[in-house]
Length: 134
Image 1 (tube, one colour):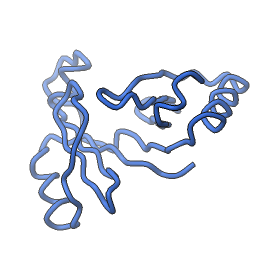
Image 2 (image 1 turned 45 degrees about the horizontal axis):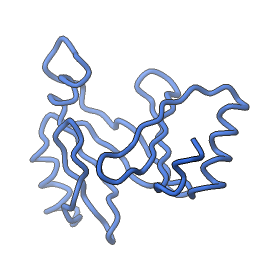
Image 3 (image 1 turned 90 degrees about the vertical axis):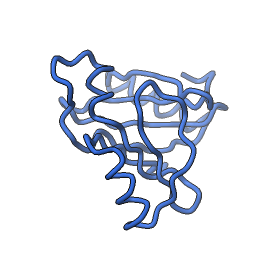
Image 4 (image 1 turned 45 degrees about the vertical axis):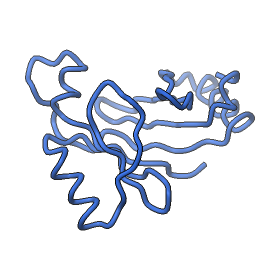
């Protein structure tokens, strides 16, 4: 298992993108067609920072206000497909940890989200080869 990415929710999507691109030196790259606007910034060919528009996140959640609080939304770990993914799912079940599964649009990667506490989320992601294991 390895750290995969960090997702940041921000009201200044373009400003945050410029900071990570122009100051930090990351490269903006492809991003799946999620239902909310954002940018993925890459280091050494890997998308390590995922930026999400706070106003779009609010609309998606049906929030009464037009803005979701800026924050580090979640930390994600990449898990080996197949046996590694199955072992994770088995450990979650053994410890009765609830989780939510999702599929990344256009890539078929699997995401598994665990809420440790309100607004504290850990994501696990694996390649399509693990699809039958969940």
